[in-house]
Length: 150
Image 1 (cartoon, rainbow, N blue to C red):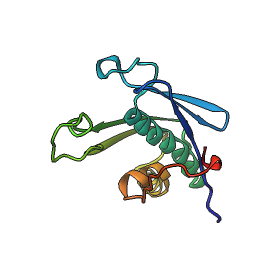
Image 2: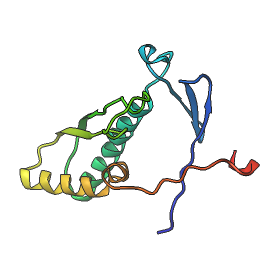
Image 3: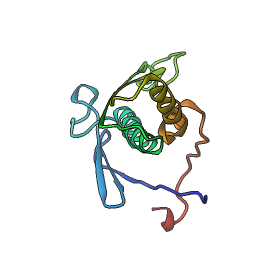
């Protein structure tokens, strides 16, 4: 299949608050007041966890349908640990990003354990967001060069 390119455009409203647009959707990304934000939206690291939960939900339901597993609903809890020292400009040997992300799933289903194990293996293999978190993805950051980039 050909690649699909997804795009977002972000504009800063304050040093801590951005409005991100994608298609006809807008998201507010902010920091809590204790970190200098206005608390008008989730933080970038919270959006990352939310993206993972959303992707697992979509893929979980798609995979369940494909394997004939009745999935009435899915509760997903995601948490991650990060050391804010480097982000705050303090010396640290710890990485800036999440040191670990944990996901717990509670599928509403009457499927047997073998089916659940198959479903989980396929879910882990096919979720694009979890793949990006689990494996290094090339990242290129550069200045915009043309009006087209805006």
